Amino acid sequence: MAAPDAGVRRNRMRDERERTENYRRAKERSREDRWNAPGRARVVHPKYGTVVVPHQSNLTAILNAAEYWRCDWLEIRDAEVWAATPEDGPVVKPREFCGLTYKEKYNV
Image (cartoon, rainbow, N blue to C red):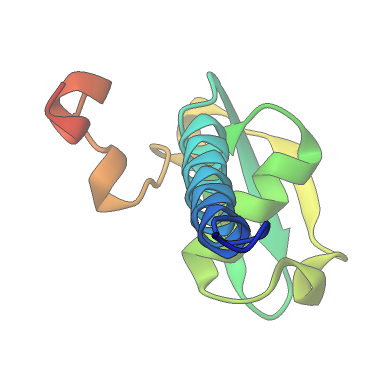
């Protein structure tokens, strides 16, 4: 006779892997949504300078600027977010978001 909990451990491990994978995919989708936001903002910080990033809210602009500057967003909480003007230049995006559609990126 098999133990009553024989398959429980395997299911827990599979569930944990699925949760980890779902979390990773959710983070990717969130990042992709941030970088594909329709607006533009100029983020100014005394230490890191100025960058024009996609803008959906001030928080997303700061998150994008922090990713561009390769720092933790908590380091630049004092950054100022301004509406971008045409003279500010183009939006700066990571290479993987430049000119690729969802189907091209994920081979769907």
